Length: 145
Image (tube, one colour):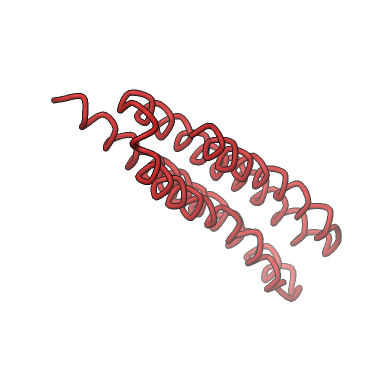
């Protein structure tokens, strides 16, 4: 394995880890939302469709990873391959973790909203805080590059 491959691995890692976190996150929050709807059905309550907004929360992170991947390809002449490797890998891991933990918050929000029918805005703000970490990671990584 030569040094140039490290840069290419880092470029791909920014998308890969973000996508993996998003897939796992979609499973976590999707399962919780289905369970919350089930509780509504058992109690003869209408199942709020708006909870799909919680279920879709972790789906944006692969977009950020893709943007970083394209950015890393464009700045490859300014950075060494090792720098690109670490930049892409660390940013991708942070994006993936952000998607996963965003999903955990969204899952709790979905269950709470199904039980009470209240607090959608407050819950969505907390989901958005996790999204902010992903956005900051993308922007700051692009600025560093």
